[in-house]
Length: 198
Image (spheres, rainbow, N blue to C red):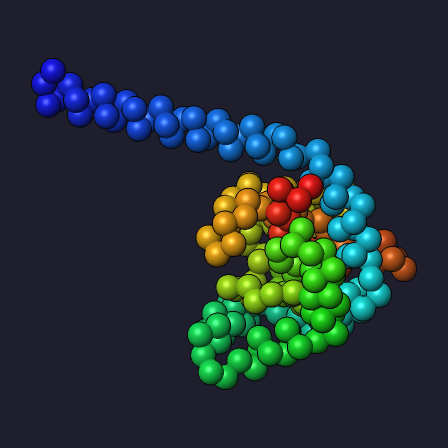
């Protein structure tokens, strides 16, 4: 067998392995779609309706409602810079608020089922979170546009991915949040779910 033939077989083998991996991911996604959707419409919807979280989102909307894209980008850049900085005023203010403490408690009580929880305002900016996120603005991502942007009953289920730090396979499940008093959409919430615990 020539070197060229061996190289071709090697590439063909790699392509087959990649195809198998893609197929396995698609199967896993299909397998968990129903339980993740059920979780979104029950447990996640219930935690998203907590008055502490609703009040925090409404309060932030009153401030961020007038923000233009330049202001949003500046805040996102500030957050990203603070992640590795000694001084973290924006991060500390967000992680230290009552709504973030509530989400941290929910994650702790879930005993590993939830890997992260964060809520966003109507602009897609973080309002509260159980753990530190790498960025402050989620408005340009599917977790926001396919939940808040898709209407009141939307459920967005992200791809199942392996977390590098925990090695757990997880999916981000996102739903919009409505004001219970008016029914108006005010924000969204994303919950990282360890699919092995479903």
